[in-house]
Image (cartoon, rainbow over the protein chains, first blue to last red):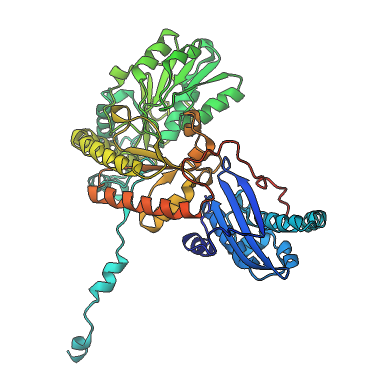
Length: 137
Length: 418
């Protein structure tokens, strides 16, 4: 098994923005317990910006570190900007992930996109958002 | 003098903070070489370095050491010295047993338990690719081969069942299974890598034809193992060359390693009664403390059906790799059945065979105790585990005990093309 970068270990030891937002504007849930990783991501939106963001994750070191990193990357960004964040951005900001983890535990970007979609669909712009996400991939 | 006086005394307070209590609880993975073993090995690198096949004095000295080691290894399992074949380790011995022990004249069928180590499972799979029928014997919830299904071994050329499981420490009813295999004319192999040196292994009482041992699991060096081959049982080599080890394992013998293995066997045999008593007590102490953690569940049997040094617990709603890394930060070394720590990204096949759900396998942690484990280390480990589990639970979207079967939010196997 490849080892984690120091940055991953830092986020693993002291993850940022852990928790739940009770009155979240959008919630993204991704993963599967049978695969070992599940992430719930909560966002609060103000003036089209991510004003607050929190996560709850069950998973390995990479799953926790990517969750923590995406909250740092997304906080304060406009929805447009946040939708552009990719799995590669998350992995890159963490100084890379072991190759096997790129596929299985790098769920955070998907969770963020799902949370934004959830927010937009509540506002009735689901289709636009869905298309936008597809195009970015 | 002036300069000397000005030197600062060492700051002991700072030093003490640096010294972290290191707790090694992964003895099923490997063990440190016992200093007494190392001392015995030392002369065989540069002084008594001869090739055991050479006729001159250098060779004869090496040969003598080799044969002493062979006798010591044999004694650990109540075998005869000429029933021992040295190999490069447990994996090679397992491969030699399975691939060299089958004989299609006895039937094109090979049988092993579902909880075998990959060193047995994979050569069996290879036989499957070579046209053999391959049968996996299921195990019960404790990981023990169900004798009700032993009928599936009928018509086999070779049956292989491990003595004790490496993950959950379940001890198999080998004598019964061997008897069953022999009723059907099969050769019976037993992987005793985890049990040897921890519980008595007597090849006659077990009734095995072939039995695998590994040096580095019993405080010997890595890279050495042995296959016991009962007199009269036919075995074909899988390595060809100069005809060493009675033509069954060619290649110049690793004399220093084998000498160490022999010493390790001698020590294991001598210290087993005292050591196992201590291990049983420490094992149950750890077990009791870990099971007091909310949502914790034991994997594998209790009492005498379990290896004296193995504890395996699933913690609900969290994942094993996170626990492993958290404990590692505290200086504690353990292992996990989580997919994340396996090269194949699959959760433990042993726990799945025992009927555990994938998420329970992902959340499993194995603690394997050893010769140097103390009660203080056990208490420290239990306390740290509770802390790490609590920390990860605060991060988890689930609660311990929550039923997660069928839960799927997707996104896992999203086309990943970036």
